[in-house]
Amino acid sequence: MGRAKCCDKEGLKKGPWTPEEDQKLLSCIEEHGCGSWRALPAKAGLHRCGKSCRLRWINYLRPDIKRGKFSLQEERTIIQLHALLGNRWSTIAAYLPSRTDNEIKNYWNSRLKKRLTKMGIDPMTHKPKITDNLNGAASSKYVANLSHMAEWESARLEAEARLVHRSKGSKLLFNNNKTHKNYQISQSPYYQLPCLDILKAWQRASTKLPTTNDISAILLNNSRNKNLESSIPSENLFVNNVPTTTKVGEDQNHPLSTINSCFEEPCSLQTDLPSFMQEFSGLFPEYTKISENYSTGQMDNMGSCSGDFEDNKFNWNNFTYLVTSPIGSPVF
DNA sequence: AAAAGAGCCAACCGCCCGCAG
DNA sequence: GCTGCGGGCGGTTGGCTCTTT
Image 1 (cartoon, rainbow, N blue to C red):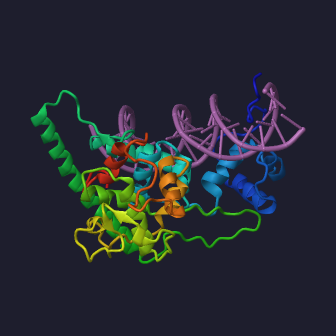
Image 2 (cartoon, rainbow, N blue to C red):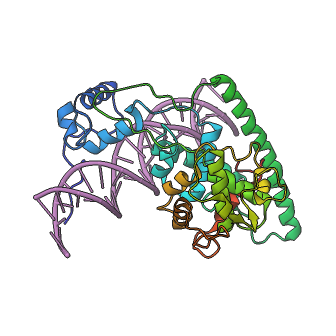
Image 3 (cartoon, rainbow, N blue to C red):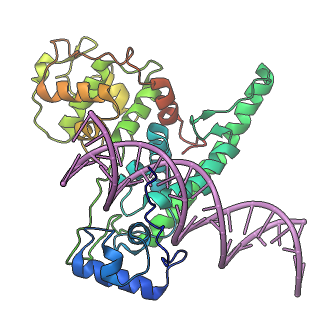
């Protein structure tokens, strides 16, 4: 069949954009919006293909684009999300306000990937790369070296974070006051990845993988902290045979006390976990089950709900390696 | 000071997918 | 159900800049 490429037309310009071209594109989008990219070059008087215009707009001209150095939080988010999602840059970009997928991709390929590799972490699997021919002693020495490097890296990142904090003062991370008449700036959802923090905490508290009971407990505790009304009567909810009506903190043996002790501030989440899980429900069906059961209250009187974390295909070990990286790890 | 190498990033390419006819 | 189109996405490239030798 051989579909004609959109840039096959003769006379179409390629390569770097000039300021004049940028201005034409901007004016055209302000006037007509960006409905049809194919029709846009003619309207704007540009000798470019629509695809090229779209790319220029999305990656450079859009007013809500944040430029410059990636923050510590952004770096961390990219690494976390990459561990979860792989090279799905557009999805990752959706969780980083004002950063384009192209920018994130470039940043990953040029910096983060190399940094992880240098530290002996496979950037694709996010697991340590320990060569097979290392014997036990050599292996532990290697791990010790990694740990040492991790300390340095952690200190460096913390110092960077402090500098950023000082220079920015209390500026909001997401600050977009620009308004334009003919296009809408899509405000991406921004999460602080609470579930990662929770799972990290969990892993510090326990060497076992979280069960559905545990996740239910976390969800319940989360909703309490957010002062949300739970659809599950808390007196009906038990975690490891401990009634969840026991206030966390009052009972040191309460499973949630263990979890909360891992947080500087007990489960101080910046968004509610069920929403986050729903956001990821397409990716991790098991999240959906938990999230749905949580919201509909379909749990038995022991706080269990259907959907076994240990049996599903989702690889907790891969996932938790990232979130279990101790403070001062090569990753964080 | 100059050449070589590395790093960075804007832009291109080709594939895929959803949708309309 | 098939086909073609438009848009979106991820991989890759090319050129500019910075750093090292």
